[in-house]
Image (cartoon, rainbow over the protein chains, first blue to last red):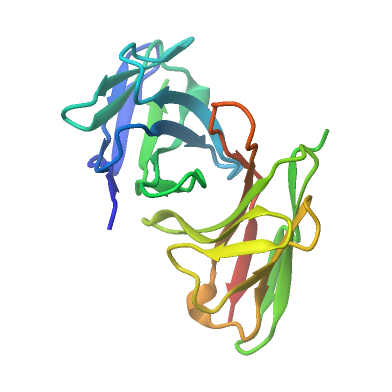
Length: 116
Length: 114
């Protein structure tokens, strides 16, 4: 079965510092999408950043950026200038192989704590 | 524009009872999805729909049924609830148009089966 692996169940960062969350995935597709979703205590799933596999340039959204290594099937999320509001569960997801329904395969998540 | 809404937000059932979760979206999206989220498991796809009148099984479909009679609504049914179905359920929708492939999520329904 296709899997997305987040090897860090929990991470902690000092406010204003930088933290990197890891994600690896497996797929046999050549074209796919990768996502990072944030889930704060409110439970709402919020899209943080997305990456199209055919684009070599790493995606960036304000303080959030990714390090996309296609050959290694690695997709890490870097949060710069961490803020208290960044504390949440972060889920990495990949589009499922075999079809165009856009189904997502999620990792088990990384709980990020931000210390003041 | 409410986006994706889910009804109810919380529910407690007894084993064997039935219920239906309603998902509604006002973005005219073609695709809709039902996920469940369990502690330490991330989100897993239960069923999905690629259009009105069509449904398909996801990763964990057993014990659930779905229907999509209207484009904007996607219903998830539990015919005979079991404690193993205690979970948080999320609905999501996605547009067929464009290349963003982004799913928009509802706020979730916390279901407890006693």
